[in-house]
Length: 129
Image (cartoon, rainbow, N blue to C red):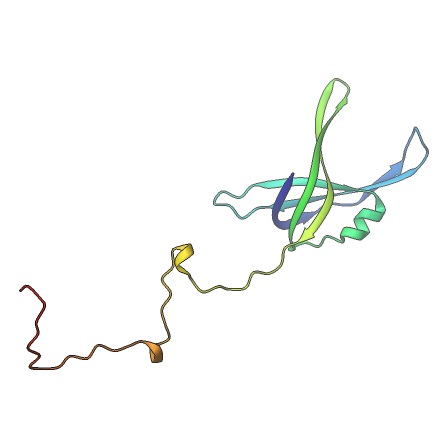
């Protein structure tokens, strides 16, 4: 799954040592908000010191986050985990001129626009009134 938006919050990095393997672990949470009419927020985590430094996520960045969702049970309750596995920076969009395809009406520059010429005494009058 993917979510595109702006990073609005970066949580504190947390870490510890696994009880089962004895390996050290690190995780950091981020909050991203999309740009829809009613903006939605998603809190996701990046697991592993190597990925945290590789992604190098900064507040205010526009990102597309690819993630997996998993649920974990703890003391009879279930909690969702949204874990990012890929992060792509969104390129800044260049302003575009409207085209007929997107509903816009392109206008030629003023110097290229043809001006109407009316000649008095024109015998040919096509108008019915």
